[in-house]
Length: 175
Ligand code: HEC
Image (cartoon, rainbow, N blue to C red; front, side):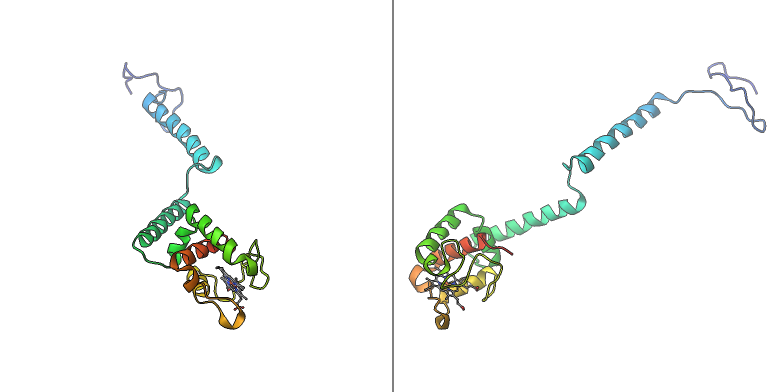
């Protein structure tokens, strides 16, 4: 076997008549290796250690939440009144404080200053005799429960104020 003068030296040993060059790793290869190591550490810190990056599940959840919120907002703008709309209203500080004022003036006498109940049922717990979803609450506030002493508020307050007080209750709701 003739040795190429440009190649580095051949190693001493022979295996079954096969000899090897003694060459160092090419720089492009080494730098690629170092780059992957640096990348893997950065990746590990970003996703696992510091928890800055979202994993797939969290990313999906965030995206779905954003879609839900946009749908709810579009419905609210279009004047559709459903449980989603109330969820959006319950996050609107203006609506919630208007509702709180209405509550204090009209409801606290029977339901308590902190919604703890009294003559009326407690509205600060997870128990809702007539249903816990916003539309069910709205129906009770609108129509009252004649047989049980809950007055109908729809005719007294009007739709906007009823919605505000319901949004206030929804904002405080414990599930
Ligand atoms: C005169 C007393 C009285 C006032 C004032 C009153 N409520 Fe009630 N409310 C009651 C009673 C009594 C019940 C229980 C009805 C039943 O047992 O079915 C009730 C029930 C409710 C429920 C249903 C609770 C559940 O567990 O399902 C909601 C919601 C409610 N009231 C909201 C309001 C709001 C909002 C106002 C103010 C705008 C208000 N109430 C004012 C007496 C009152």
